[in-house]
Length: 159
Image (cartoon, rainbow, N blue to C red; front, side, top):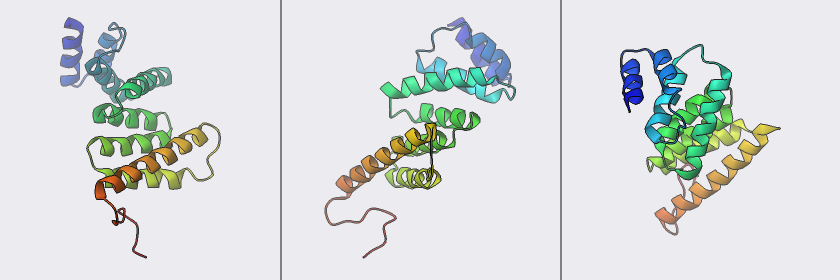
């Protein structure tokens, strides 16, 4: 508990490097508060090692596997993925933030942008593109069920 307070104090005074060092001793990162603070600290340090970014990205994804509606963690995952150069993961995570806020139209819009960006994807991006396609279909179906029969999804022109 003391370590967590020390890390919070370091972040508050603008010292993410010290916060990160303090948080290293808190193992494992199984609580949301520790995970979020560690991710923030790592993202704020401009000279963070890629391995630290990868570890926190993995921890964020593990958390999201069990807590898929956690907008804060999705936003941190978007920033982490972007820092790692994983643009499709970042775009999807930004869409998930909007979905967690209940803004399905914005989430769908972001997933469509990710879908356009994924055209011609190969390798690891192909898996991300498949996830984006499936999630887009899921959110469009949810939006249709909420809107009711006979209504047109947002962004679809009449006729």
